[in-house]
Image (tube, helix red, strand yellow):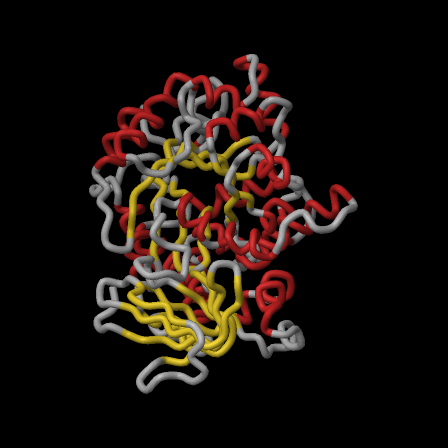
Length: 450
């Protein structure tokens, strides 16, 4: 990915769960790591210095890029997930491929500034607002792929099957642009998408509300044939469970299991309101769970059962979802602090376990198993968090991971490297030079369509 081989010198880096001082990280033009050498006290000649703690790049496993335009306005007043959804539907009707590219480019640049090197985009804005396909049926998805490339990060485009407004109900007017006519039509359209060196294609089932039971196997088979990730919103709200029980006499998790959706390539997003027996089904299948605590608390969804999911055997990952904030470090510590609030006990997850959820396990959930580790042969994707800000100063270097996970924010990220390419340098994005301005212009452009 980089035009030239590059050598970096990390003041500190986390290697195999240990904070090592003075680590040389050499990268190749193919974007992989060719050398990791600790114990180098000063930067070698020609090496780029990374002051702080260098960690594997963060993975944002669940994103809806267009939701970023709701930040601020979505926090005004009261309501529930369902009232918030009405504002989201109104926003979704305002986007076209050009506007979506501009917005997503700025959002993905914000992610790079937060140390995120790969995003999973749960994409369902497929068609024109009235449901008519664009001349290029994948114009919106391709705009997202291009936006990620322009912002310098990797993407897994999780093309989402969306067919219904609920159990036995056709799509409503705002949902028409989300919906393909049938699961087979979705499969044909999604099958035309093509990945790149920095983009991979996966599948998603929006939810058991939006994909009828008889269509679930079509999506699962499509993903199985391609051996690609398959994601699904699961039990985000109690109402989903209640309606599924009324329609099918079983929980959403049981329905997915019945139709072959739960596998090791599957990630259940949210999984907030699981019923007895659901955990065993998810863990027994090796299905992962992506929790999005900042969104789940912003929308008053509830606290996901992170500890129970882990105990059941579900690998955990993290996402910023609606982008109330974009800060995977905050998502990570919220796994632990949420468990503390529920149990009144501290110490459910170590800092190293939370970092793995934010990096290695997140990349695996997105179909990038060669990323998320600082080792020879891995993708040269990493980020450096400052250890001398007002939030991180004080702890000794041996506790740097604890300081980063439990105190740092996205604002403390100083460098982001993707494929050996220095995308964020000293807190400045090298491709989207004024990211706040890009966000302002893109969001204003969307709202100008009202």
